[in-house]
Each structure stands twice: as C-alpha cells, then as structure tokens.
Length: 133
Image (cartoon, rainbow, N blue to C red; front, side, top):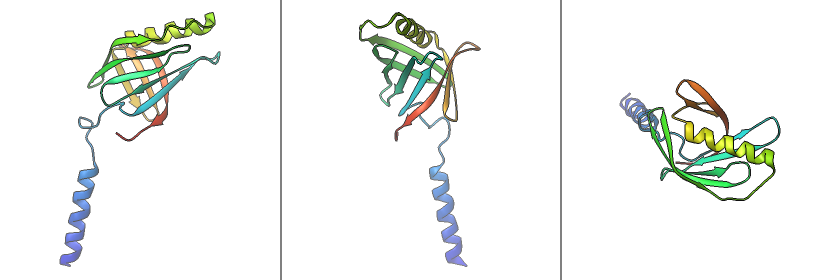
C-alpha cells in the first residue's frame, strides 16, 4: 500500500510540473502563422523567443520586434526588403504590413491567431508550424 501511495504522489508531482499556467507560457513563441486571401496572395509571420518577428508579406521579407503583455501585442522596429512585385501582390503586402502596425491585441485559440485593433478583428491567421520553446 505504501508503494502505491508513493507512486501516486510521484505521478501527481509530475502532473503538476507539466502543467504550465497562461502566465508562464510564452505566447506565440516558436510559431509560424499564415494568412491568405481569395486571390492566392499570402503572408507568413514567425515569432521567436528573443522577441523578434519575421516573415513574408506577399512580395518581400520583413522583420522586427514584438512585445506581448497579456493579450496585448505591439510590433516595433519593423523593416523589410524592398523588391517590387505585381501591383495586386504589392497591394496585399501593404495591407498585411498595415494590419501588423495597427494591431494592439491578439486572441489565440486552437490553430488560429486573430489580430485586433481594439475590438475590431483585423486578420485571422492559421498556424502552419510550431517549434519547441
């Protein structure tokens, strides 16, 4: 009986150690999301553990910093390559980058990430890659 009790205690401790509270979990880190429009244009965004962000915005690659506090998100020090592309792809890219600059809040559920400006949803992206933190 004593051995069973010790085994159960060990299982309970392992369970508690494996549970990560929302405050301890680093939101978005190690994940890459994709957004596509109905015309086939798409963009991606990857969040790294050093608070850097990078991705593809339709024609060019972009990079910068991000900061998460609760459900708030702020992008800063954004830059990109400066290649020209098809006018429709450039229009998509302008909108994609504009959404990032206007985003102030995010909601992550399942395999989707929605960026908001206040209460207004701006873009919903789908998870395409998840790395270990």
